[in-house]
Length: 191
Image (tube, rainbow, N blue to C red; front, side, top):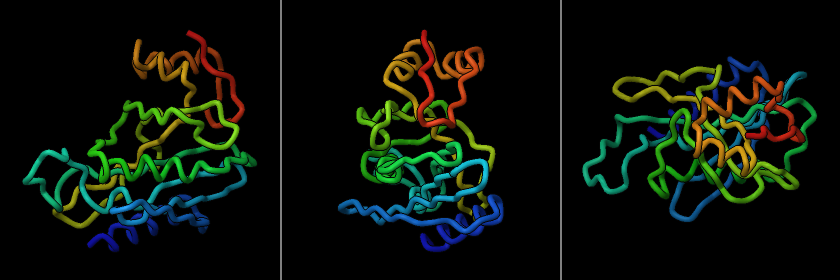
């Protein structure tokens, strides 16, 4: 079953984005490998995890978790074309493995703070999740669709802002300041 989920995801992404991806695989002890697919177009570079959605996310204390039904998600990071982001795939894979390892449920407006740069030389240390424009990947019944969540890299100051005022307030601040979150060297929103 798990292979068909990742195969379905791969076909969906190639059809929607229109290019073949580069692949990087990251392995964690006791967890199936997580791949990070890198799609490069003339306008942007799109990174998408593949492997988080193999199994539904569930509370690790639930001894009777449904192995088929339940929320499934993958992460999407969109950056401007030409961005050099060495190490980003490892951080994305870490977050994508967190549901299996730590029982983390990935959802829109969630803040996932790694406490370390998201790529070499990055000022961003956390992701703010939101629904991505790619939508959801339908799977065969009775499995739930895969929710594609845009993971926006944010700084430690912005993460503190989200904790204090919420995700909507940070997004509003980006709009007011004209901040393009797809640029790796962007300035941080100031509270």
